[in-house]
Length: 293
Ligand code: ASP
Image 1: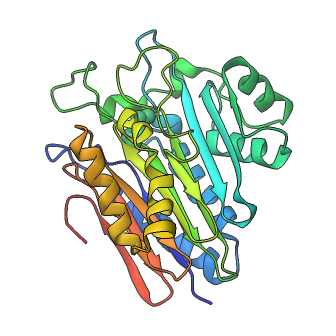
Image 2 (image 1 turned 45 degrees about the horizontal axis):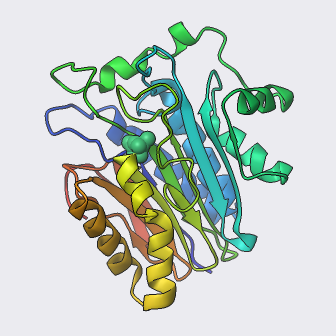
């Protein structure tokens, strides 16, 4: 069987900014993920491992790199989904956790609910012994490197992370994690933790989104990719591009990464750039930001 892996570090890439730290980081992660998949790791373990590394790096607007909201608090969203049995887990408005994606996975594995938010999610994280942040004001400092060049904290800049994978057993999984958009209101939840908007996986396809979340919610973006393939019989690439077209028509921008059960991959975007990398059984790793595929 074949494997495939696509990862993204957000579609909020700004041509005026320097991404010399992110390019080698993406290259390292995509190689590491390929080694995992080639050694028989599951799609779920692989997407979680990659996203956890991105969350801890501070190089993206997720996990450590997340920016405070208008009230000065960092609120984190994440979700993941496994194609087999369409199992899913999500957390929203989480605070002080090092790996929101691990929290989403714990929610999925707990099995009682799909999504936990706010104080209940925080309590769940602590009950499950997940790693927490001792001093948020010290830990969440890296976002300053991700602000737009004019330094405008009121910009709607963004930079979610995500990963989608097909493993050698035919398993599909998708994971997405974010600190949201800059200058968001307290309590704002975007598309990232919403199954069917920011993340989707079923027996056919796995998809992770990044962009102006409100538009991805209004189009049920990641599920729409799956639905177009299932009901319209279109290719993975055509389905992703059609959804991005719909988002563009509504005034939104961003990108999608996706892999299907045949090992096809897609990573289109309609913003200036999307930090991304891909690898597959017969395809050497590539890293791109502004360049087309
Ligand atoms: N979609 C994310 C959100 O709206 C932001 C991003 O993708 O960068 O929270």
